[in-house]
Length: 448
Ligand code: PMP
Image (cartoon, rainbow, N blue to C red; front, side):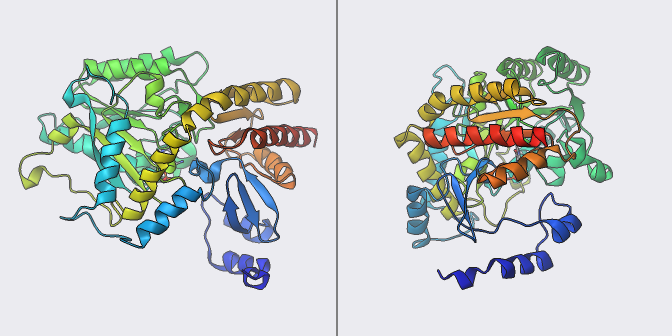
């Protein structure tokens, strides 16, 4: 492609006139931001319109777990688009959706456990198109299940402070970050918030609150929803898997649902294929997105147990009235199948196990060596530190962002949290470069 066709200034001018960016103070953006104009991406790198390369430290909002444009994913996409681009799932099915569903249930938490009763197996796959809708449909499945299976008062969800479950109104309702909720307060439904298990004082305090809420109104709780082991958007807050296990037992004790939002943690990010497996837990509903289509296109799924699914059998009035235009999109399904095949063939989970200790050690060292850098934490291929004080909307993280950009590193913060969530298959030498760059950027920002 010729450089003229990619004229940076022209793109930025059009963008600033017409594009409304997510999570962005648009006035400042239009007046003062010099955006990266990305013209290509490969592996762990983005390339801008001036030909500069940037290491993508967060896998483009956590989706490109196999790096950008993995050749096998691109090939699978191109082959599929040559045959069938899209068709609805209304009275229709197709091989990519059917085969992917069978492959997903074969890999789901609990799949290998002989002793697991049939009803508790994650044996059904509902296709959606992003993480928010994966959560949205899980909420509706839980609510409708109880409505038509003898527990109509079960409409309340228990959720954690610091939870992030997506952008739609239902997913926002079960979220636990004030920054995302406050403005929409009157539109959101009521939930029970318990403290985050990642808060100081340990997970036991949070669990005591979950138990109390469950015992106080077992007839009203439709389910507990959580991001297992890592609360991502809240700033990579890592907590003990024992909490997830305890919640599973408590929900079983009153026979209500556990919804695991593995939109971020699913497919290796947290060090196991599913973070639920770190806790030895099988949820009733499991939400999967991001890594599922390797960052190539929007595609997601919610897995349900046979028991949940059975609650929708019977007449037409018992059906789940929910579905998106792009449910089970063949392109997404074909790519997702290839994602699973690449994980197997390239031993991606083994790679994570080998690299994770290095990420942990490096972040611990940063907190020791760089003044003002605190709370190192890591889980799988996530590493994070805080800059101390200020909160989500403070500007501290952005100083690190600017320092990193100069070094060819794209390192978007979450408030005062500076973190990495690189492609899981990032080569070891590139990972070292990344860790070094993070430390240097922290050092420059802390000195300035
Ligand atoms: N759940 C979790 C745990 C997430 O991290 C996110 C996205 N950051 C979502 C849901 C929403 O996913 P999406 O942006 O694909 O709608």
